[in-house]
Length: 140
Image 1: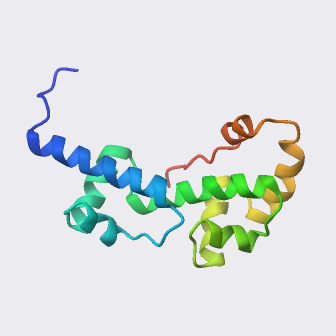
Image 2: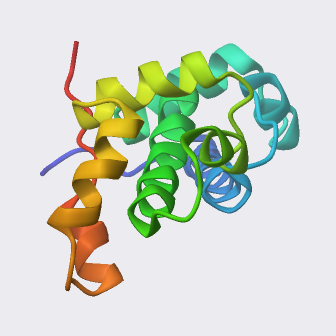
């Protein structure tokens, strides 16, 4: 690739975007919104959303929901929590929104996933089960 090296501003933005992504990964179960994430790195919400999408291929909200669904999948595979308990444990405040996003990413409702995962991942180590059942976002 023969492009110009990134400008100091672009490098600064990339560092701030990485901080946002790291915060989402770390604090996914906390109440997070784009405005709060943007304030934390001294950007406007619109600028953060545009730059985050350009760098990572999805919006900050989409990235947050993907992380929450990944954690939910892991909890549902364990089988010791109800779907409602998992919903709130991963930081979602609406069971309906959680179920809709889960179904979009995984291809089945959380209750069906929980029932199926119990038999599908039997005998797999947790790290192999996580990789084998990782959600894949399909462009709409």
